Image (cartoon, rainbow, N blue to C red):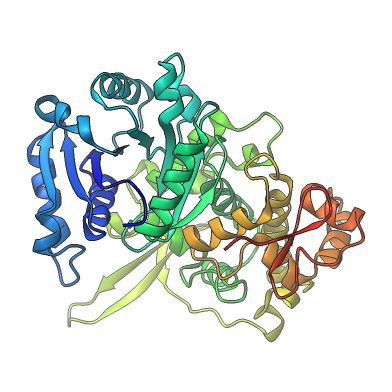
Length: 433
């Protein structure tokens, strides 16, 4: 192993905690997996070994020791890294970290897998030793598949702790580490959830079918084939509702995302009646089986609020690439511009709030949301000067990194075959591997 982290403790045996424990075990770590319910870690280890494509083998499972928080917390005393992956409740997390601080050894690292609670709120008022040794390690699910881990320090987190975590996560766990800041939803979810929630609101008035929206928001842009509605079906409207409420409570007062920090009325009604997505058998789409054993896809018509047969979309040539789609003067092009210009402009304006550079933003979207290109790489494909000109011509504001680019007379965010990137001061720097 490359790092000095060999003994790992994970608290919380849900999907995320079990995934982190399983990954660490496959990479040679000895792992303790705890939960309030002593049976939960045992069941989690069994799940990791089950199915046609098990996450861990019996040999890996032997590296994971299950236990309960109340009975076995003291066994974490010699752990090198203690990762908390429990319920998203601030007080419960604070209570746990207060208990951990009393039993952990000097030199151990504490991290939280929170995606929505500010790290500063978790450690506020706690001992200096804890504040120096704590960080966020935000894994994406499923842990054994998704490359991204967002690594976020606190105001007092030591450079040594951050270096150790960077080495361990990248070299030993083989993750793509993105350095983020202690801001709401960090990088990936801040931009990705803006795109999804803004997409729901903007598509409602676009005058095009759900199938067309998903076709436009997939291959032409280099996004996954689920598109917009298909992705939210996969995530679940219940999760999106929680995300929206978290954004509404925590986004800065001037943030454009506040305009979309709720489900549209039709989606809210779907949520209220339990029509959440794949987990409930259907959300925006569902598979229907016929009496003779056949099956076909149905689409939930948001205008009629009823099911109809799915109608696959066929895109015109101008809509098959982002470079032409965004400048197409028809309903499809206007919707694509409305959503993607908002998302890319938002990404541009968020630097340096959420990240000090464009590389971490691009990597977060590629590694966490499976975008083929990050926002700034997409802008380079479109032509950032042409994009900025249309933003201004349509009444938008050119700011953030787009303004840095245009003010300094540059024509791309990356140059020299992607080995250099545009920095906040208007110069170029080498992209770190």
